Image 1 (spheres, rainbow over the protein chains, first blue to last red):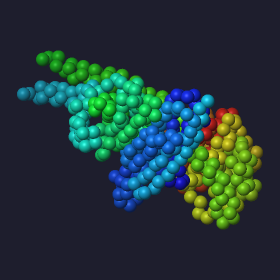
Image 2 (spheres, rainbow over the protein chains, first blue to last red):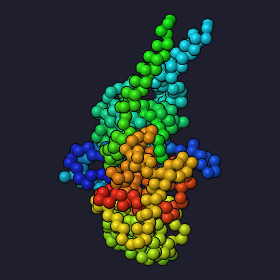
Image 3 (spheres, rainbow over the protein chains, first blue to last red):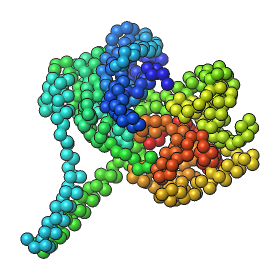
Image 4 (tube, helix red, strand yellow):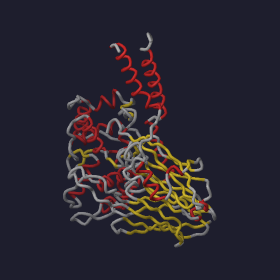
Length: 109
Length: 148
Length: 259
């Protein structure tokens, strides 16, 4: 499966001022760098997401810094207060220079 | 002492060693945790108080240490909160992740799945904008299941 | 000091009662439910469903020398495969054999798509999971009409009851005789009442992996200290057929969420 592929889930609609859950799953092995390959006995090099930023209408909402202690294929849940319609964007990167983005729309009803 | 007395005292000693520790729950040396907290938060663990205002949810028994779901929530207004930090006492590297909040988050909430190397406390530490810290801790038992 | 022997006895009793009480607080059968609810509440999606979604993407993607995707024959998002899993394993005329979910996918990929060297890796498991989800909500309905199906069913039944390996275990010992009881932290599934085939392929939260029934059978054989049959071996087809038939009438709900 494509590393860095993400699923970003937000409700399609929200009332003005409502606090909604922003939930995401990202495909990534999240190797901490301390595990040994059972067949070769070699250390598996660290390969994990390092940072995830949450934006709403291009304004920075949250920054999550993480390491190999987060489980593989990270599931993350966080909240967002919706004051206006717009675009939720997550932008994330790993320790090997991989960078990805994912967006979703919310409308205020 | 005579043999009977020796045997009796040995039985006492063994019974004590076997059962009494199960009643108390020792927390093992957390020097790695203390170092990590000092390094990342700039304060020592002993200065951080536990508070019921930080609600940490995690399973009591996690059969797989590879993916333990945890969630942290607080009613403290998010405008007063700077960041949330998650540590696992007995992991080779106790720091797991940290989240910086802004008022746009609406509330203090964060959920994810973490790795735990062995039975340990999971700690959620809130750093408030006034420089103080609040913490919630929960012990999660990490086991291996019986069959597969 | 004449009654000193009472003391260790008393301490043993107290310790034993404390341990017993502590053990009662956490029922492992509830742990599955709790983990599932927690994941759904906090993350809104179950890991198994993520694999199924990835399976859908792979299903629609061309692979192999023929340049076809699964959807080239089976319709976009598998719309012609709805309900197929409810009748599997079954006899397939083009292969002239009874095939289970895994072997059928391998057969299709090799013969019709020109994929070489099909491995039972995560991508494969995702496709298998997606195909199984196309029968969600339907009742398991495995029929034994073709003589080869009847023969394979008999083989499966024999394997189910055969006592093998260093520990002389059979499937029946854990899943018929002791079904419903606990082995360490796990409650054993009962083959007749629990209709297990309806919730496989499943996501196992205990090792964060998606397993098909073939993986599960291999896992079980390892547990009873028998070299597990390799993937796509007929033993998997036979046992899957037996288990699916025992699950007839059960509602299919995949991917399952198990420990």
